[in-house]
Length: 175
Image 1: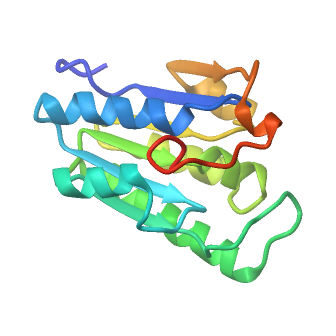
Image 2 (image 1 turned 90 degrees about the vertical axis):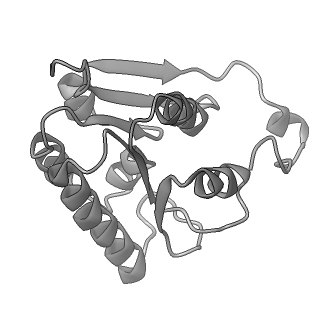
Image 3 (image 1 turned 45 degrees about the horizontal axis):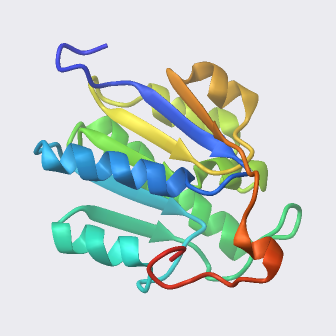
């Protein structure tokens, strides 16, 4: 670990709500302490998410790579593969540059699970990061290899969710 205490790898995974929210809470805390923060979103596209609007107002760099279509395991197209590859290329460059203190790779775990990326390629990018770069990888179904590499793993569990009662995503709460 670096003298400034940064440089750890976090993995936020599990079926429960709150993985991206927890990562963005960490981004808010880091930004408040004048750390340089960047978010690379895999499989996401859209400017109307409240958190994206807020991050951009704060001057936090957010890069989105998604086709805008729903993807499920085993059902993706070349556009989905291209988006994931571009996201990983940018993430690799950002991680190695040392330009940012905190880098969030949002939904990278899902991109691996859906076979849009190889876990080995993601691990290679993470291992190639500049000294002192703190990284947070979010998304369900984090692979065991990534969890083993991590310094901190949090698994969100789902006990109850209003979706089960037919409540749709609410602006300002779920998006």
